[in-house]
Length: 151
Image (cartoon, rainbow, N blue to C red):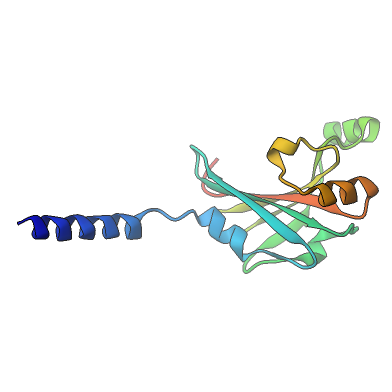
């Protein structure tokens, strides 16, 4: 009887793991290739739908879009509304500047933001060498954020 119960519990555990909802945003993030850039990953769920985020480090470029590929992804340059554009012109871009956005065909979006130094270290893991290269302008950092679903 104990053996039957153990087998039943094992079967239930396997079923629960196999039927757990997948984070579609994390799957989309993993499908993205950014040529010449390295990635550090953080993923999370929120109360609206699945989401995932990663930081990419690489050489400065005038058009990051040329380095990004992913199946089904359509990218566009982000054009801020006039009031935000005026603030950027007056004050500079700030620590985070959205530069691109895109859509996957399955209700997932991509937001690409340039991270300017100094960026709060608690939300951007980086090595001392990366920090120095960022300060010297030899390296840039982009945050890729993917929310999926309504909201």
